[in-house]
Length: 365
Image (cartoon, rainbow, N blue to C red; front, side):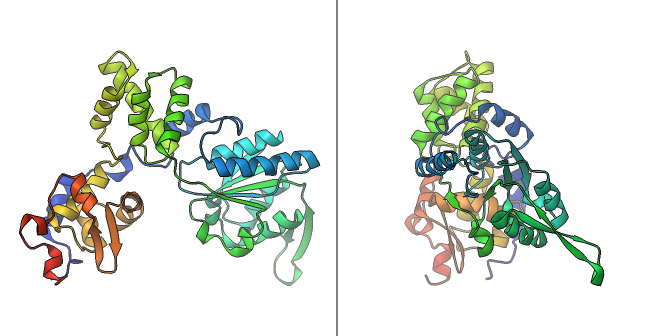
């Protein structure tokens, strides 16, 4: 039997197991509401910034040295998963240097002319924050090489044999590039950054500090146990911690006296289907399909995606990274396989221990 073939049982299970992935409370991306709240919660300087100790220490040295020289700071590349503070750090860099900041993104720059228009309007010392820099078009990327190194761009006027390159001098500026996929950046671009930092996922203790700080700014009363409960379900990501805090705050205002303790936090997050390890409906649906329909695997990604009613890319890029990081799922050449921790998390017994033959027995494993 080919487990990459879709099955009627898997298809019938789709609607029962999960709803749209776009509704995920633990999505690390930022929507309009998140961006508005984050603007109020963002720390204003490195002293307020929580976590990322090594990055903060190194960046502090870079910025202090630049201020002492009276020069613009070196170009900075920040990589890491969404929601870890790359945008916040770019704003802190501008604040520490006493400079304005211009914010744009790679997908918004489709032509070299788009980038030339932005660069030519920069002020001396200004910080240009370029989010998702790996998604910038190739012509714009090649123009950025010269701008970063020589503070100059060549603007092409005319077409064909009569085209003329006019050099345009730029004021010194600091480029802060942010990317979730540093491996997609070409080496010539990566090498032009004077300082490169990788943002790590946060430890629970650091997220507790984030939750306490945000609760103070939002005028929410929370005790240490309540903060620990929220932090433990936040997937190591401050953005998710702040989002969960807001939802727990709503629950506490409606169902309790407005004070968040461990019981209130746990009850609120149960309503929103975020379990004690931070798994939501989609994550649990993937595990339930893998364990209940396919006896723990191995099973092909396409079949697994049908079983949860999602696109293949959604399962692979949205659900799997966290499940793999938590040690609940493994990717193998033969397909996706559940780990013993996945069986334990869902309170199920692996087929071998139950006395029957699991799917791996069918393959002679």
